[in-house]
Amino acid sequence: MTNERRSGSVSGTSRGGHPIGVLDGDGIGKEIVPGAVRIVDAAVESMSAPRIDWQRLPFGRDALDDYGDAVPAHTMAALAELDAWVLGPHDSASYPEELRGRLTPGGRIRKEFDLYANIRPAKALQGVKAVSPTMDLVVVRENTEGFYADRNMFVGSGEFMPTPDVALAVGVFTRRACERIAEQAFRIAESRRRHVTVVHKTNVLRLTTGLFKDVCTEVGERHPSVSVAYEHIDAVTAKLVRSGEDFDVLVAENMFGDILSDLTGELSGSLGMAPSINASDSKVMAQAAHGAAPDIAGHNRANPTAVLLSVAAMLEHLAAGDGPSEFAHVGGRIRSAVDTTIASGVGTADIGGLASTSEFLETVTAHVVRGA
Image 1 (cartoon, rainbow, N blue to C red):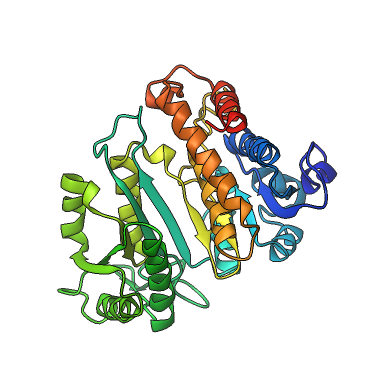
Image 2 (cartoon, rainbow, N blue to C red):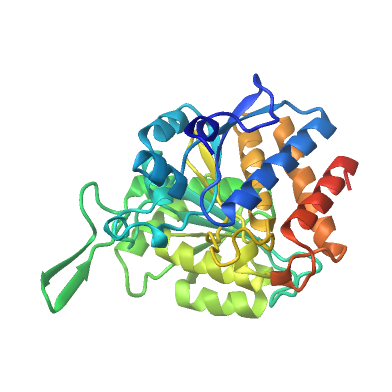
């Protein structure tokens, strides 16, 4: 594949529509991301919705080989002009040794565009064995601060060692970050079952998670139709296992949110099927929670569910903002088609099915076109 083809629009799409970026990534990304693009196009055409002008951009190992950078400068520049893009998984663990200790390609994009809200739905699907078969919740995770060392310093890392035998870490919590993630959580709850659970650890981390809890409380007062509950991180993990169906929207700082979203993804069926979007006030990135799975790449065995649901969430997020309102219906059509496909018994091997990636995508496409 030439550099020109990698940086151009996706083959078969039309110019003049709403521009959305496509970064296929590594491993199974080269199979599932193009498949998701084709399904969106099928939904758009069948619903006479506004067309999408897909902008394919160099990213991942191919970009590293061609340009010496997994996220070339011209990819970053192109993303700056877009309000949405699909990010495929990347296999940064296989990159040259000198690159492995740096911020991951996805992390660089997230940081560059201040994608502060990581929104991860966890809904059990009929036909998938789940520990919590009626779970239907959303984890809203603050994505820029907290205890993660790659996200809490303007320059340098939040981890350091004053001596070889002492390691320290800094957690950062600001009112601005707490307030904007809380606003996201309460707005999402207003469109769902109107309940937010604020996750904290104020019995130990009184100042840091105490600020998070207090600011969430203040924001909640501006959303009187939403009820609020408070849970310690350790207690809520146990409650999610026991009665995950009782939760609607959970809002948490970075590390707690990461743990909770992995837990709820697995409880609702499979972490490998967990969708995710990362958003700022003006941009949104669809990114499945799973990795590049290089061991099955190219074997037509990957499960595209997570990226399909992530793209559906991206379109719905655009519609809720300044994007075409019809995108909400396109996202809903894709979500319904995935549900119908899996409920009918068509699934990939990871969920006990016999379908290949291409067979699964073909079935979803048929349901998208029929509107079933």
